[in-house]
Length: 150
Image (cartoon, rainbow, N blue to C red; front, top):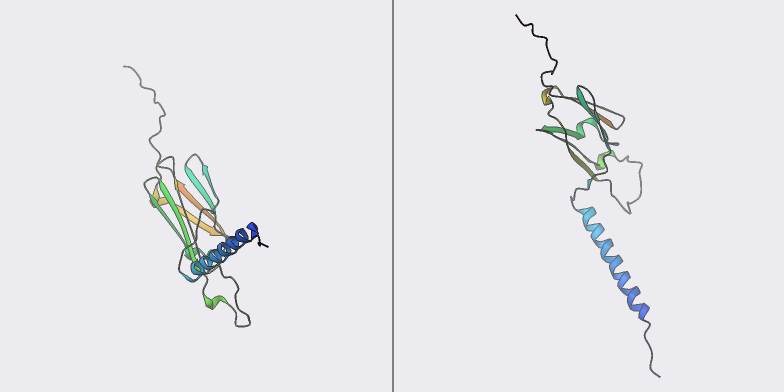
């Protein structure tokens, strides 16, 4: 009697191989210095009369981890941190089964609708929220003046 093979066995075997390969790739990325880049930085931009105010959520970062730069009309916010072994307490015992918090990096650039006075920009960071004030480059006012005719 001829034995028929189950076609689903081959498919299940293929999925098991793929799952092992994804696990191996994940371990390789965890072991390397690959930077996780995220656009998960939520940003609000408010256009006031005299300034733009940008508010960005950067939870878990220290003020020293954040870098701001302005080039022409482009504002770039970058934040990067390393989770070092020094931050772990000695009372922690056990072995990590998965470790994704070794390095985290975020970067976001946005184009401003008008020129700003970069040298007068200011920023504050409190409880994971970054607030940036960018004074607008104001042009001379278009107020008309009355001219007497002699």
